[in-house]
Amino acid sequence: MRCPFCNEDDSQVKDSRPTDDGYAIRRRRACPHCGARFTTFERVQLRELTVVKGNERREPFDRDKIMRSMLIALRKRPVDQERLEGEVNAIVRRLESRGESEISSDTVGGMVMEALARLDQVAYVRFASVYKNFHEARDFETFVGSLGDESESQ
Figure (cartoon, rainbow, N blue to C red):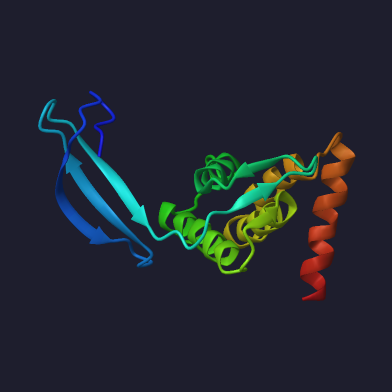
């Protein structure tokens, strides 16, 4: 594994252990060249996934893109990193186990919305404002009003 600090080609594994959810291996590494320490994660990948965008453009699935989007929505919210990791891992597992190599961006977005609704209502509304392309305050009002309707019917 290449060192992210000095770009040396080799690093040494100092410690390995499974993540809490058991779906990845966390490795602590050290660079013999610069002495820096860093962490890597090794995950099982069942199949190569391609995301089909609304304009029919295709791009490789990127787990980190889901994580970044959710982190933005969750910024300054009281949500544990482990819970977030668990939700992202669950999304990836669900997508990989569908048996399809191409998935729509709407499918991915819907799964992210569901996960954020479980994690934090404020983050859910934040993400929805971008995902559903809110243009004015009335869009927020309508969406938040529909949240109250959903909780009353459950």
